[in-house]
Image (cartoon, rainbow, N blue to C red; front, side, top):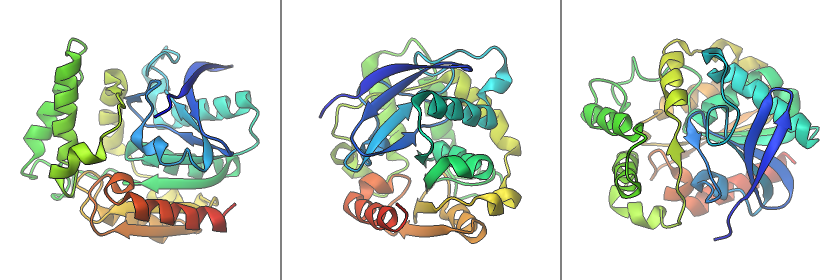
Length: 282
């Protein structure tokens, strides 16, 4: 597998680390608290056959700019950073695709800057806080795997973890979000490695408690593809159904044999749906 090309993008809001791969129209991919590197990202890899993918390390992730105050880690500030990057790269518009919290960021992007987006792909996400009233969410205290997930997340924040230990704990965490956990090694067979930005995760853990943009979803004018696994334990499918009902130009695809990673668990079907969506909106 080819590595991603790394570039530092200088903007008025700071310098950001961006990894690029593929050819075609530009597509931005990011995640609220992941730290990417030259090995790339499984979700982003899904688009390199059809697009020039720009995988962005947000502020405080990887070698991107640091935050002078906590508010710079918020979703809206992250969107303003992405807009600065888009301008610096000279793109009038670009597509956006986000998985999980990346998808939540995509929703906010669509609300405030639809005119900057050619399309929006939101996978396994929500437009509001998804834990408090969802016992089927693994972050709900009544979920049987809640404590185990919390312990894994806290341990993964540690900077002193060995590479092997981090890899093993990440695997255990990911298996909790697979429809068939026994197929983990098949799905995650590439040499992709990434970390968690502890400071960004800690900020998100507070911000998400008051996150609710459902009343603003009607403001999204860019074509939006909403994807979710039927058995998603992180952002349950009810939240994708809700977004589809409230975003005017949206399409919902539910994958019946997937949990939180439909782009891997049903990769062929995911690719087919993406092609269908792109053909009708490009």
